[in-house]
Length: 265
Image (cartoon, rainbow, N blue to C red; front, side, top):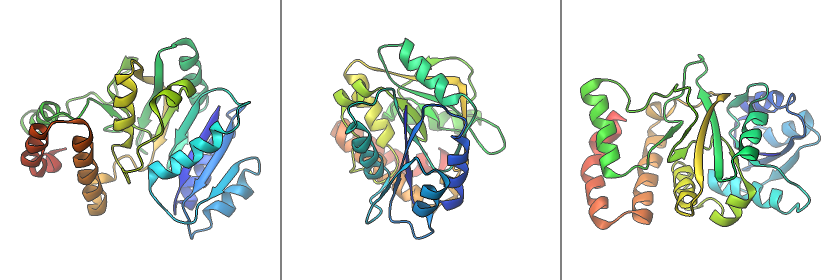
């Protein structure tokens, strides 16, 4: 397997992430650093000398960094096994990546499989997976939160299920599926690049699966509501997703719903 870690200004998180990979056998690591000024790239090269550390001249967003790592990994035609995307602010549980790899190996039409994401306190992370963000889906999710005071999905569901999308904070992707679907859309600076890729893969007949027996702790999994810049980026990416995939009528519905939905989601 090849693990691709996009990195920017997260030195301490990155060190913890790399340490958690030490128990994973046959694991090639590619760190793509977006011109960090906190010494992340040098520290990664020192902490894990076998890792490939790619130093970008500037930070151009998550999708660009991931695609740089994917191109680097795919250039090695002798390599096999899944391509695993992993955020720096994650800690991988023992055997988690092996479990994801084994699932891909035994389910030929699964393009991508993701673990159960956990918050730092061990509870399930919200929005680790979900449905396509159609107007009807967004309405149902907002209504569930407003009226019933609970999320639409049970984030800690222990069933192995196919879903519309999974978070790319940690995901194992089949090489053939990536070749057919293409790389991530770099017009998304952050947010919805995973939803976009999963939709494109599903339109080609691939499956997206959540495999909760594998677990990964994601320290940034609850940060959106506390970060105004992240909220703005989320809204912009959701609008871009609608422009790419949905009709003008759906885009109008989003414009009407978004102010309220953003407060409820």
